[in-house]
Length: 166
Image (cartoon, rainbow, N blue to C red):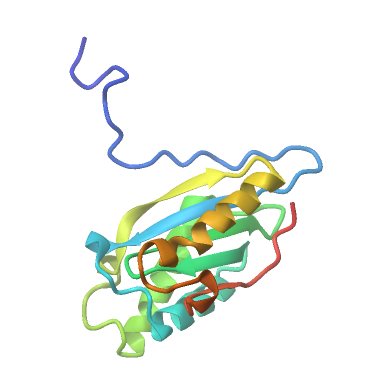
């Protein structure tokens, strides 16, 4: 067998499956996006502000709940229009937009925008309302597990832009 084939081959980048639409059920995707080299640069007011502006501009997908941690962020999103772009294209757009906002404001330094973010991201489509609730509970407790705050409500870098209904 070729050394590049077989189940033991590890994927270098995550496979991004297209959203699966089923009759009368919402499409909600759970995303994890990391900072380049997992640098602790994200949990800052100016980064949160840039992300909120970028997500507002990238309006073909709606961002629901989100948590920004020092070296990565989690968010839930859902298509906002009938003909929506691929998730990979949407993420690329808002990462670029947020990077540009940070660089133009002087908050991102002089590094090129590609150095703020890890090249790819992780995504999973949620299947049930319970999985949305369970994932959110897990995500909102991340700052507590990391020892950053005593309770989830104390973490300032979280919120909800759109209410994603199951």
